[in-house]
Amino acid sequence: MESREKIFGISSEREFTLYALELFRYQYAQNLVYHDFVDARKIRIENITRVEDIPFLPIEFFKTHDVVCGNVPPQAIFRSSGTTGMVRSRHLVTDLTIYRRSFVKGFEQCYGDPQDVQFLALTPTPEQAPDSSLVYMIQKLMDLSSSPENGFFLASHSGLSARLRQRRARNKKVVLIGLTYALVDFANNYPGDYTPLIVIETGGMKGHRTEITREELHSLLCPALGVEQIHSEYGMTELLSQAWSQGEGRFRTPSWMKVLIRDTNDPLSYVGTGETGGINIIDLANQDSCSFIATQDLGRMHYDGQFEVLGRFEASDARGCNLLI
Image 1 (spheres, rainbow, N blue to C red):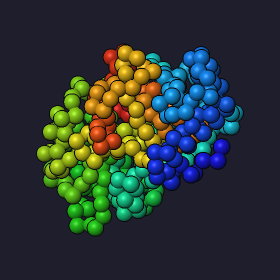
Image 2: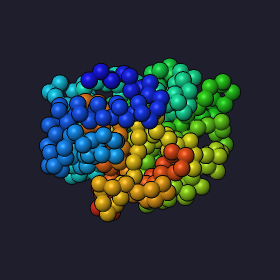
Image 3: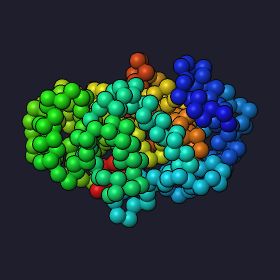
Image 4: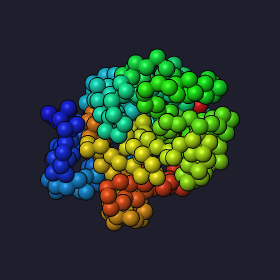
C-alpha cells in the first residue's frame, strides 16, 4: 500500500474515497480480525464501491483481539483508561511516525504551529500513564513547542494558577488541555481571569464526578477561567487521528478522517443530517490497524460538515480519558 504519507495531502471527497477503498482492501487482506469480521458479514469485496459500503468493525473488538495488520512488532501499545476490573482496549501501533504526523498536522489546522504555543496539561505525566495515547500526544506537542513554561499540573493546581498568571506578559499562545473533571476541580478551587487562554477539554466525567451536560460544563468553566469558549478534543485509544472543536461542541475532522452517523436500529444504514445515531469513524491514519470503526458514541451531523457528540449507548462501558487516574 503506497498511501502511507499521501493521506495527509487529501484535498477532495474523491481522493478520500479512493484512499479509503484502497485501505479497505489492504486491511481486509492483512488484518485477520477484520478479514474474519467482513467474511462473517458475507460481504462480497467487489461490491464495495463507496465509503458507505465499507463494513465498520465494532470498537469492542479492541478489548478481545489484537487488531493489527501482519505480524510487525508494535512500536507502542496504547491502552484505554478504565476502572479496576474493566477490560481495557489495546491498540498495537506499528508506526508512531504516522501517529505523530497525524496529531501534529491536525493540531496545526486548528491552532497553528505548536512551536508558537505554550502547553499546560491537567493530565497524568508520561511516567504516570506511559500507555496513554492522549498523554503521548501532549508530550510530543510540548517537545515541538520547546517552551520552558510547558508542564503537567494534575498534581499541582496551585502551580498551574501561578504559571498562568506569570505568563500574562509573554507573547505566546497558551493552551490548557485537560481531563474534564480536572478542569472542573481547578476552576472551582482556583478561579480567575486567565485570558488570553485556550481551554481544551478531552471528554466526560464518568468515574470521577456526576455527569453534566456540555452546556453545564461550559457555563461553569467559562466564567471561572475568564474565557468565552471551551474547546474540545475528540479522540480515542483505537484511533490515530483526532477531531477538534473550537467552541459550541461542534467538531471538525481533518481531511484524512471522516464521521458517518449510523442508524441506531439498523447499523448497516445511515441517518440524515441533523438526525441522531451511532458514530462511525474512518481514520485513514490507522493504516496498520483498522481504519473503519463503529464507536459506542451517539452523535449527529450538521449541514456544514461538523458533528456533535451527544452521549453514549446505554450499555457501553464508562470509558474515556477521564478514567486515567
